[in-house]
Length: 457
Ligand code: PLP
Image (cartoon, rainbow, N blue to C red; front, side, top):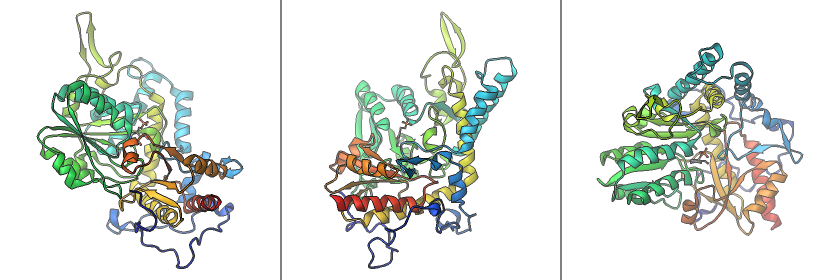
């Protein structure tokens, strides 16, 4: 079922009565880069009503050089943040400085540059530990991204703990990266895969989840935030429920880490993964968090240099955590860049980012739901960033091409989450996904252009 604007009472309307589109006539001019309002916010849900510092949106925007770009003669409106985020100057500088001033391999050389690179790499790990609220630095494994992290867990924890007849639970809204590694394991081991259903708003049906859990459940893999629907899943509760049956839980935080404050200890997550490039950092770097006790029991994954203590032709002993899981040379510069990205997010404040983005998501939901012919898929009240929709009688390709002409970048397709689209009987959507630097005027431009598209067809 697709929720349309009539079924969707997702947000109380605060757009003045009578006018369908009060913002239709906004000119995109010099004022474009500044928020009209909302420069000071009170976040009652996350900060017990204390006044937060002003969210300096124009300052934030000026930190991202690419936002000054024009595309097809128009200011770039980057609404493809679910695919990857743009990078602040400090991340670009961190990468340049690394290569210009202390490029070296880590943990090996007996020289100054190697020491500097090693310090920077391990500082990045410490930064990630703090960012996720992990109890020990050994619990942070650098990988290429969320996909690699999930493969690592499926092929090490999974292959040693899943047996014939065991059950793996996934939600209907998982990204292929959190389906395929488990499916391969399931087939290899003769295990059973069960899917937790979602309702028409795109929320997990917790009562159905409860029914699927049993003493045979070994692993539950859940996305924290859906990359298609934007739904924020109740993972704290879901982890608790799984633990009551002795199951381990992997949380895919790819779409959560840039938007929400995460604390893996509060969540009691067994594994938590995310990708640097979706959190303002470079590509090629991501994180696997795992509880130390679990990581220690797991066999190594990739084999080679760095992950060994001692090698003879008779056998090998493996290194301690985290090195045991980091065979070969890692993405050192990208880890340094990720550290800068986390510094940046923390400087802005994760609670402020969340508050701002929730409000912007609400604004966008409201704006799009008012356009006749635009149907939003995913109307959970608790959602952030991703807004998927289809337009009656107009293909996603046509919509995306028209938006691109106006400098608006969105994503179309199945978003690597085909099962959730099948749930809504569609093959493809248009997805706008928001980040901390997006502003209401950009949403207005999106809505304005969509409105024109619906009029033209
Ligand atoms: N999980 C989710 C929810 C995602 O949205 C994505 C990417 O879009 C991934 C996993 C995979 O991330 P990566 O390609 O960075 O490994």
